[in-house]
Length: 65
Image (tube, rainbow, N blue to C red):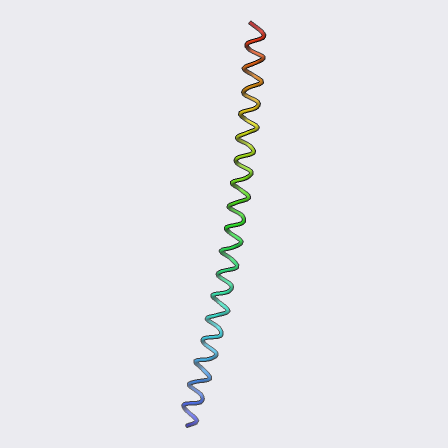
């Protein structure tokens, strides 16, 4: 009976540890997802700014000639 209780306790501890590890991995994934989203937003902003700058250059070239 004592062996069964020890095995059960070991299983509970392993399950708890596995659950903690799983929760940690989920938090890491959420963090990476947020970082990727922020990087996407920065890239889109840079692309918009580049497009606007190119439009201004085209207007300046057109007005120059």
